[in-house]
Image (cartoon, rainbow, N blue to C red; front, side, top):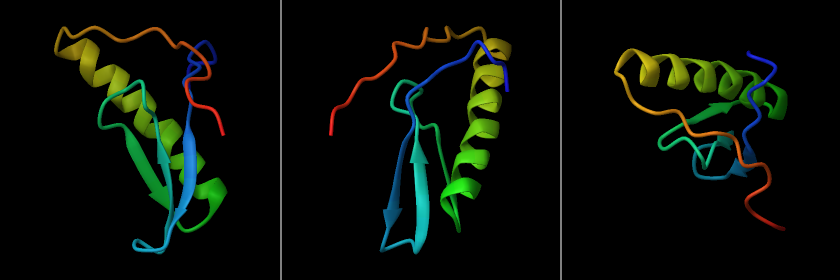
Length: 72
C-alpha cells in the first residue's frame, strides 16, 4: 500500500458475522473482514488500494486522509 495514504480504520469483532470487520469511514463502502484482527487489517489495506485505483479509473475524486475522525 502507498505509504503516503493514511486513513482511519475502525476494526471490531462482529458476533453476527463471526469475523473481525475493518471499515474505512472516509472511503464510502470501503470495508473488509477477516478471521483474525491481522487478517482483517491486511485485507482492508488491499481494499483501500483497490478503492483508490477504481476511483481514479472512473475519474472520481479521492479524499485526502483527515486522520482521526472518531473517538472512543
